Each structure stands twice: as C-alpha cells, then as structure tokens.
Amino acid sequence: MSRTAEEIAQAHKACLDGADTINVVIATHAKGSDVTDTDYGHDMTHDEKKARVARSVGYLKYQKALTDWDKEDFTVIDKAITDADAFTG
Image 1 (cartoon, rainbow, N blue to C red):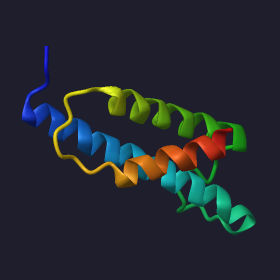
Image 2 (image 1 turned 30 degrees about the vertical axis):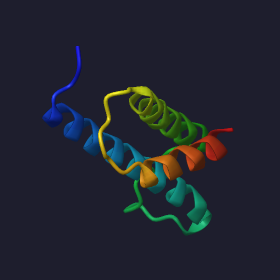
Image 3 (image 1 turned 90 degrees about the vertical axis):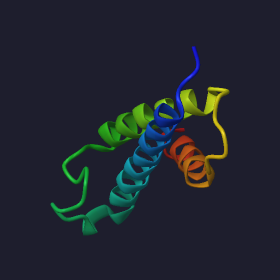
C-alpha cells in the first residue's frame, strides 16, 4: 500500500518537526550552565536528552527509508540525523 500525497506531506512535516526537536535538545544541551527554564529539555539529564534525540532520529531514519517520497527536501532532516548520531554516539 502506498501513501497518498497528503500522507506523504504530513509525514514530511512530522520529519521536519522531529528534526526541530533534535536541534532544540542539542542546542539546549550546548548551553550548559547558561540554560534557562524556558529552554526545551532544560530539566532533562544528559542521558534523557540522548534518549529523546535517539527516539526522534529513529523516526527520521525510518521515514527516510520509505521509497515513495517525491520531491521533498531532506536537507534539514539529513543534517538533524547527522547531528543526532554525533550527539548520541
């Protein structure tokens, strides 16, 4: 069963949201002691941040492996995957 164009668009948007989550968690971690309680994940331990990033990148990798994508741009998603692998590695 292949996905409809609407399902593909929704999946791509979900991937972009996942990439954003990865970027925000990594950015929060990078702030170190400068983190504030307005930063997403500010109250997470390093291991919890790694687990959150690992869940998001797993979803991105699963979606990217699907073969029915059309002309969607994966630049931001690919960078988030690379960054997530480095962060969780």
